[in-house]
Image (cartoon, rainbow, N blue to C red; front, top):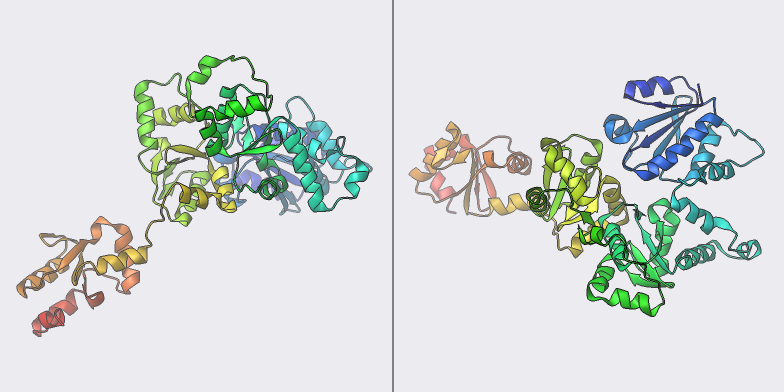
Length: 491
């Protein structure tokens, strides 16, 4: 049963495996995500140790039905089953927690040895995530006397750990992802700036450790990431670092602090990059087309499908988040144009979809957008970029109804009605010499459906006077035949 990891190709296949009742661990991964790949190596090791358990792997983006069923919004992600039921979950690249949770659901291979140690030994190979080394260093021990640690409160322990991380390199970057695979456009930009400055630096992926992520915000009194430190002092985030770099101040700071500058190898590659985006290999026509699409809306989403009909769970999640933020956004279906789909990966240096841009800057994919929403960073960023919330539907309907003293919501327009009932009301108003405004409900489905609920009137046309509903075609014609229509609309 154990010793191998089985690829899951359908929900039915997963259900059948889980239905056996045996302990089962499911790894949601993505081929473009380095963290997934590194954790999958450990996952494979564990499958050979816990041979009585079922180890399953599913490519999250390729199986949206399974991903959505387990609320997967970021990878790596693990779900643990026992007796046919979900008993635990784990999000993120955390080798120690993975080994512990596997041991808990399957039973430890060595009752006398803690699973976390085995996990870290298996993960401590040349290919392991750099962040795991940082975690080992931070929890670790060799640089922090055991006796001293025992005398500290939990809050003090975190402060000591944060200071150790900050001081671990002369130039230290706390970012989303790693320098080789940044997980947000702002982290990407700072990484590129440091490359251009030619300095050696350390980094820490704040997505891998929520304690560090939240603790550092308070420790530094700086609410967002990335954060760049030089000799233990906070320089700032992406905007400040970019400004310092452009003005030459960053180079002066490094020089004043005695930071060694590396020889300028790879200068040509750096010169070919704009905003951290390698454009080599793309034609000028395609590059211009991509820039135009990115800047076609202040908030622009490149996704699979359309907002009304997303074609993958990750795209749907970002659409839902943007709707919750109540912002207007443009979109492009990358499934409709393979040249754009492949070209944008190169242009943005981001290998998957969806991709969200704000004011022409890449924010990231679904996992980054979700994290930013949860932390409140997305709302702050939208405010900083002066992206205003779109007007609520009720507010919009109220304005439309009040846009003219006599207002007719109809199918078509007064000169070309598109239904007999609308035509009748238009003729009645004209015969009575009543001036009126109109709105074609066929031109806007949101208004059409929204007005039915707003007015509690299910059909069209609808006639309003000074913001109040008079009624539909039958009521208007009754008023006209009784000689009361003009007086009703002039009270």
